[in-house]
Length: 250
Image 1: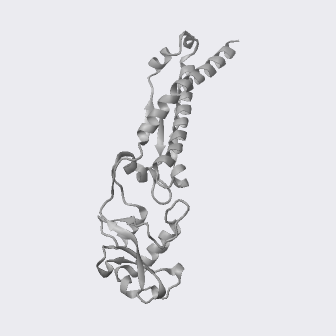
Image 2: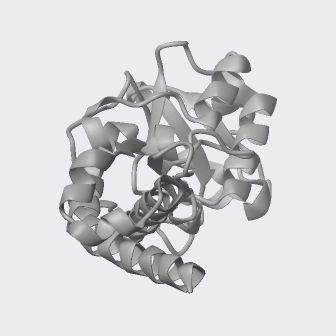
Image 3: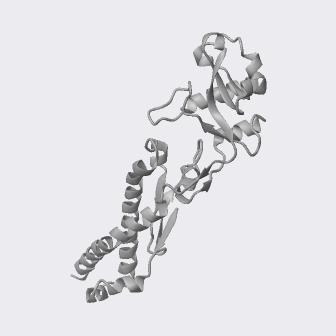
């Protein structure tokens, strides 16, 4: 999220002598309108830029999670960014923060559930392997339903799933998952595959907190978009308010 403020006195100098025809109330409404419209344009640019920085393109949840807090005549500031909280799953703001500034990412909802169930250690995270029997959606991600299915099966079998399910004939939609180090492989989440479910695929690696470099310069994008649009929006708002003022005088 980024907040934009403005210095009214400095901005009025760029509008010429006609600005003296406006009352202080006119000026406050004019600046609030210009700031709001500029912020909305910055939000549009942010949405358009996602496809360049997010691998495989943004999912609708991410695209729809941007917001603008409008300016008011009594509060000449606007905010543009990503919502920090969501009713379901991981908020886009937290998910994108490592991409915007670098560093480690917070635990996702799935990781928190696995920790609460005692299946992951507090310092452990999961990273998709890319080679998975789980069905991917059109954006190359594992669907929420598949995550739920995996969590349910893991909670049923856990570390013992490797042995308990080794000869399982569970149908595909009841695929068995387990956490372990089968055959000396690294600790991870595995899925039973093949005849009698005797084979397995690594579905997720279990790692320490993943670290990211800055790959999505959100603040720079918003600053550039705001700066590019601000002057023209201020002039448009000024013309509208001046026209309204002239009509009122007649």
